[in-house]
Image 1 (cartoon, one colour):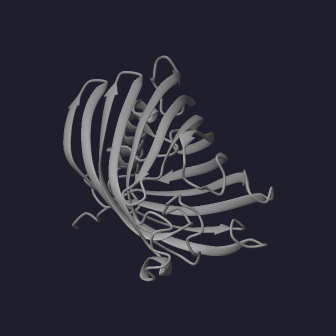
Image 2 (cartoon, one colour):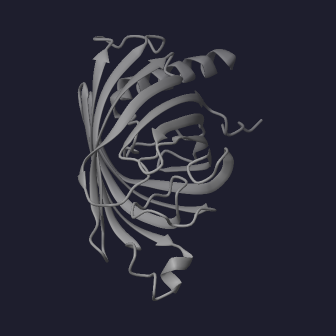
Length: 278
């Protein structure tokens, strides 16, 4: 029994390491974490408020669960001093993804998924930029498609977002910001090492470049960011990410145009494993 569990766990970890290059830092791929597994993540964002010059920080603890091979959910919260003089709890977010298409082959696959998320934030809308990562309350729904080709993984996302804020209830202020937006991304990940993936205990190194954009549907404000990142994976369980996000173009007012990110994530397999009948 124990031996079979160990072998099964090793097989799952090796399979995960073979598609490590689609574990994007800033977006979600169409693939899910294994059914019955649980991931825990802590992410940090550091920046400088472009209007006040003050250093700002945000921390995001997150739990992700594989309900089945097709369904994945996650919950997260944020603590930051982005809108206050000291760190404080500011938001809660829920997310669900359903993978509805999977065409798998050796060292390649194509997958598509639909996703939806919603957040509550204590912050009032101050800037044009709309996010569900601590800044605003709102909902979002969209589609993601991911193609794995040997050592390269590319992915595209398109979604619609709606923000809820008291300003939109007052006609005098409703035209200050966009309330609805189209969000989109294009992500590429490349497996740097190992060249031959023979053991799940090998360290993996991945290089990413993601393009992240949004355009408002009322005022028409927009932005486009470039987000490079590097990722190290140890024992196919622990991921360490370091990345940055820089504005390429745009006219949205934002707290900051340049941001820096660090995160650590660990995986727990077969947490929700079904008990065998005796």
